[in-house]
Length: 130
Image: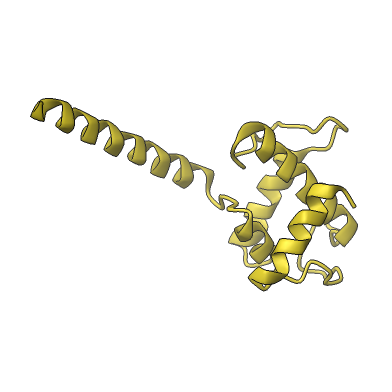
């Protein structure tokens, strides 16, 4: 198990996430209708942690591929779709929430722009009081 994935697995039980739960039929990979294996899930968790470490966020572009040519962007979209349809296993939902995963990219970006606008507004108000 990659060290970042192992570190996440150590932190997740404190959040009520069982990272060892076996695969069930409620989670599928982005490329087939077969249940996603726990091994494949952990591999993608490793990749998403690596992406966050390099980019500072989990807003993976749709076309993004990992160094080993895995379709991380497609996997992220699949997790969002499964979640929206109520088909993502609860333990996996908790694991992604613990990583501060964004379930709706557009909503996340809207909130970030609103925060930027608020910071700008406060800076302008402060400058006008001087």
